[in-house]
Length: 160
Image (cartoon, rainbow, N blue to C red; front, side, top):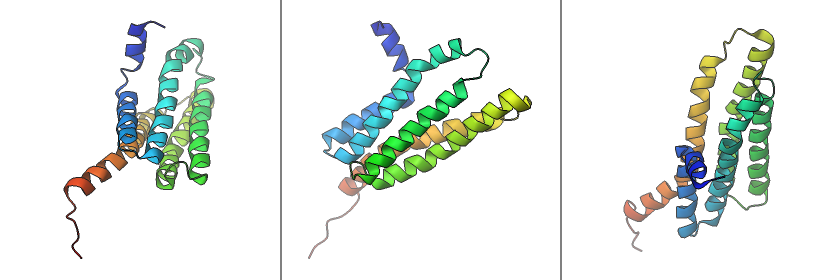
């Protein structure tokens, strides 16, 4: 992979924003949130890396949706496991899983629609739900930074 191809892959602004959030959280010494953002970055990066190859390989649109369902399920399982082991913030873990459930449902519905129903009624839901859930996951990575800034600049110290 050349440097230009790598820059094109990381040109996906969701992935770049999550990577920036992971670095900021690491510098703020919020290890739990930084780990959540880093894991999310890895899964987003892997997803945009195999996406063009998957689209080229699966011209019949038969395998791409189960692969994406597996990808999202692996991310959900990993953050759930790390949330239970107190390695990441449990609120981020639960909210991340809740934001990912519509992605699984839309991919499943899309797979059924493309292969069996063939009415293509899932296109609108796919175009609306997928970006909204991805933006919510990106914001979930940035939420601890916003909380830190709010506490730093807008909360007045309490006098005893």
